[in-house]
Amino acid sequence: MNTLQIERIDTFSGHRGPIYALEKGLDSLFYSAGSDGWVVQWNLAKPDLGKVIAQIEGSIYALKLDAEGVLWIGHNHQGIQGIRVADQTQVFSIPTLGSSIFSIEFMGSNAWIGHNDGLITVVDRASKSVLKHIKASTKSVRCFSLLSDEQIAVGYSDGFIRIFDSDFQLLNAFLAHEASVFSVQNRGGELYSVGKDARIKQWNPDFTLKNEVVGHIYAIHDLQFSPDGNWFATASMDKTVKIWEADSLKLRKVLDATRHGGHKNSVNKLIWSSFDDLLVSASDDKNLSVWKIQ
Image 1 (cartoon, helix red, strand yellow):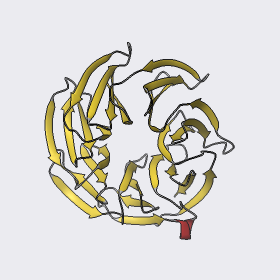
Image 2 (image 1 turned 45 degrees about the vertical axis):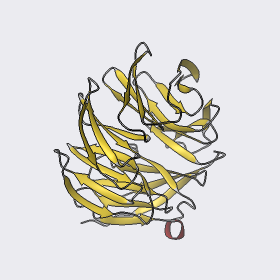
Image 3 (image 1 turned 180 degrees about the vertical axis):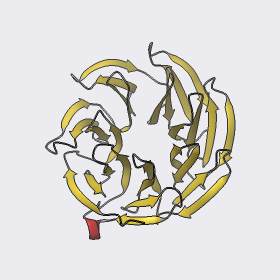
Image 4 (image 1 turned 135 degrees about the horizontal axis):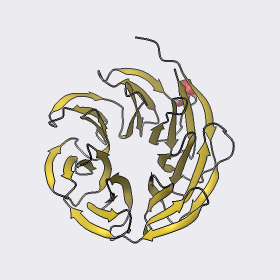
């Protein structure tokens, strides 16, 4: 196996508080948001100052860019706002029953919105009307992952992953982690999940456990695959980012403050961009680190 060469090539600073949300944009663009209510557009090709494209009252935990170039912003103040990134105009606002929004995912013509009280709000993306409220737990909805055009996996703070179909029916529910499931990702029909129990778990297509490892010292907040799917990165409360072989769950690299100039506080979110294979990590230390992995 080749040796992984990793270097931190940039740090983007400017946020005034912890950063909780990242979203890929077109080509070299990406977006970040957090406790300061700012949504910032960055360009990996031109690592200069970020551009604030929206300012929201309250913290932002979820961002999702649609095919029309509208960024769906989920916050803890008044629901969802849609900002057209090209000209920074607000194109819609959707009030929601649930309070804090932790995750947004698109399935077909609908948007699934996960709240901190176990509520999922399903919105028709064209009309912006609420189609359905789904309440399968009293604990927070933390993350979504599309399994197909017809099925979606949802991670909750009660440790369960629940599988729903496009008709909003609960198909399956299984206890995945001892506490919150913070990230669930689909790779070729296999699910990967991480959570507050610091474990990484790999699930077969029938949702039986295939493999698991203790990944970090403290809670794992995010898991993201490399563009080719051969690797994944994890972000943790223990201030580190780790790089793993996707098939074997074998640890290949630890990115920390001491050796790599990494983060000084909890790492909350990751994106692994197809632009130059760059990995971006977001932290409570208000900074974004950009990693070149070869």
